[in-house]
Image (cartoon, rainbow, N blue to C red; front, side, top):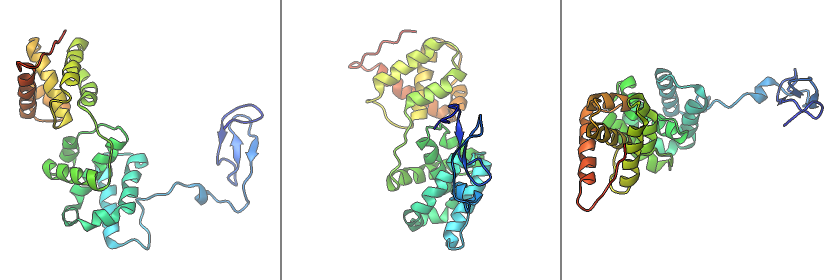
Amino acid sequence: MKCPECEGPVISPSGPQGETVCQNCGLVTQKTKATQTYADWTPEWFSNWDQDDSDTLRQWLTILRTVSCQLNLPNFPYREEAARIIRTKRSQLFRSQRFGKNKREAVAALIHLVLKEYSEIRPLKEICQTLSLDPHLVYKYAWTMRTTLNFNGTFKPKDYLKEYGPKLATDTSHLQAAEQILTTLHKKISGNPASIAAGALHVVCKNNGTKISKDEIGKAFHISGRTVYSSSRRITKLVNCKNFKLTVNT
């Protein structure tokens, strides 16, 4: 919306009674009722307690606020979106005894899924390391929640390669070769997308004599060097399969 007088940006609310005014010339483009207060314009904080909230809901929200601070997450949109889901989907979440016994792990899994929804790459292993949680348990919870709560956000191996690959490989041809491998194998290999991307990069570096170890790649992709090695072996077998041809130009 632009100001009809000077076509400047319009801010709402900005006036002492919540009027819509132009940032440049100060023209009031829309008035509001005199009873309008600032509280009527504030965003809804789903993570705040309400007097009608149950003890279980308060526990979940308290853990969410604590975990969000430990992960250094901004209030908007990630924490408040997670809080909104907890409120709107509490019947499904609270029904699970597993979630109830391990609320911190459940909240960590939920945050991981919310970050994916916003295309914010943050590996589950990194989240678990920061919170000192068991990554295997959190991964199981995330898998269950993805189905139960109908989460659709997912990352592909290429996303992890583009995010973490440039930190290791300064030669763009290595990244292009790894991306070519991922493109060709995307229907032939499944699993953790971060480990697949790391394995593809490891294969390229190994074939070209680039001195980047599996541990260095694992550290960059927030996985173990052993996982990189296992993924690299799987990819190598597919690449060398008699019925499968792959041309990598580096």
